[in-house]
Image: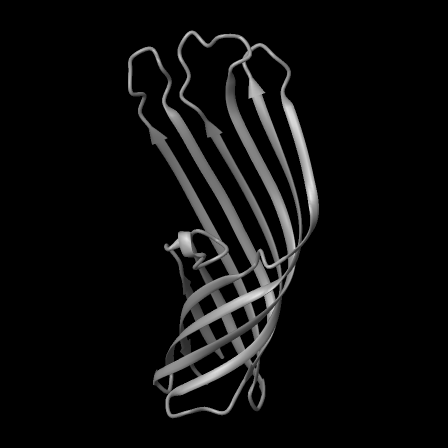
Amino acid sequence: MGVEFGFSGLSNIGLSPVKGGSIGVKKAMDGDNYFIGRFGFGLSRDTDEAMATGWTDEKDGMMQFAAGLGLQHNLPACNHLVPYLGGMVEFSYSSSYNEPSVQEPVAANTLTKTTTSGMGLGLKAMVGGEYFFWQCMSLSGEYTFGFSYTSSKTEWEYEGADNVESKMSGFDFGPFSTANVRLTMYWD
């Protein structure tokens, strides 16, 4: 049995599907096969102060999480390095908003807020290597690639006018393509 911690922060190179962190469990099934479960999460909130008087502050926020279940098969080890292959089913949800800086008083038909929310269901393959510092602790690097079905909704709010809404959904190949770094601690 093991507990793993995922790290992110280099979102510009896709280090994690969730801008935050993740935690997971790894349970030996038989021989070189493991059951894995992971939960990822992320939150952010940012306010940029107005550059001039008479303007509002710009505000951004985001919340997202992902949960997945999968299997991992370890290949023959080479010293302390254990390469592996696996697969996972993953569900994700995200929500974000942006309130742009606008001049006060707010004129009619001015965009005042954009809100986006979406869900995804994916099936992904993974390949990685796990380096054991000690028998009970490892650091691994992992690359995933897969299929996903996503559905999202974006709403634009305007001052003194009707809101505009857009809904999109579809299948994609590769949006779950990520690189991950994980620290895992094992015990019997």
